[in-house]
Image (cartoon, one colour):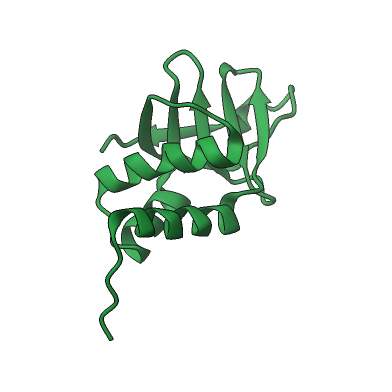
Length: 125
């Protein structure tokens, strides 16, 4: 069966999917990254990192970005245009840039354990 949807319909389906899977993330700050806000899931996986100075968000390649590309067959530019709409609707955030990032490790906040600070290699697309 071949189902055709227009761009707006696909955007709404993707946003609904994002809300279902990532609409209840917890926002956390970290003393080593005072200008950033981290969006983490119930297992302390970092899924988004919002950087205030540049009004940009880094999206987890492992969890969000790759799912959108593979499951919905979106191009990177499509993901870059849908993420700001979703973040504005769900988290009331305005953005200028959306980038993909591979996060390594979980978010750990204890002040005495700097070895577990959020980290990752940035992979720009």
